[in-house]
Image (cartoon, rainbow, N blue to C red; front, side, top):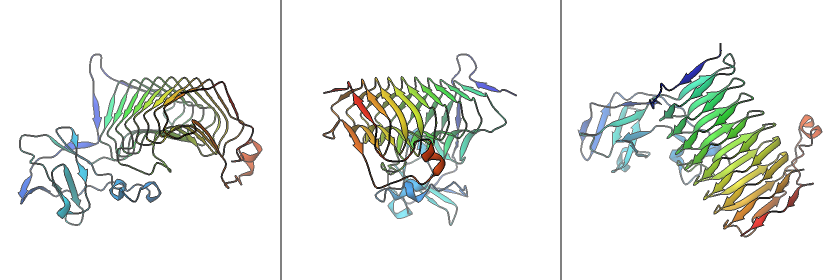
Length: 337
């Protein structure tokens, strides 16, 4: 049956992957919780920046809502830091918990909408502190409206279902990406996607405000994508017929908008400013970049077309024109400041 999960009028409910932790024991300059035996997933090594190896671990601790930094051993724990000793089932923090609310993550994901739940609606809810993701969308026609996805270990939402509508949501302070996945004919409209990749995953691999791969017919419009410690909008992995229009992508550490190893992108009417780079077509073909405003991006060339030695070997994709060769792209009527 079609199911709607939504906030009661005037209420702001939050679903959290954390629990409140009590029963701390003073241990020298630290505080210890015994019997901490929760097992949370490790993220892929390919995502990890060697300078930030702890990003792979999805444990999280918050004191009065402020996140602590995870370290790799007890000796390194100081104020604002924590360590999980999995061998002896202990959790250590460097902050005195007296009179404070201490929350720690114990759940991997919030809601899974599986393939029997087509056309489900999730509206007006908050999802936080999950080790991996707040919501996994695996059904067709799902609508996510006016939700908030914040402080999740990997992503706010992961998509594997088609025909989703994602509107008016906020994706912020997630560990890797606000939005990720593969979903044909997805509509992303009127969302705010900001301050993601707080765990410092590799900018050149998976980290982004939003990243979609192997998607056909996606529409991304009227979103605010800003201050992500990564690329803002990233389409990758043999995508086809993507429309990216009227978005603001600004103050992102890497690229404002990137269309990579994909075909027939339409990138128009966007304001792309103060990013590491402006707009990049990487090994993509038959795409149009027009009527965009590019302002104060740090890389000297506001629009970049890149062709690398990569060549697609998938015959069915090649038949659709997805060759991974940079050709037949047009760049017209853009404004550079």
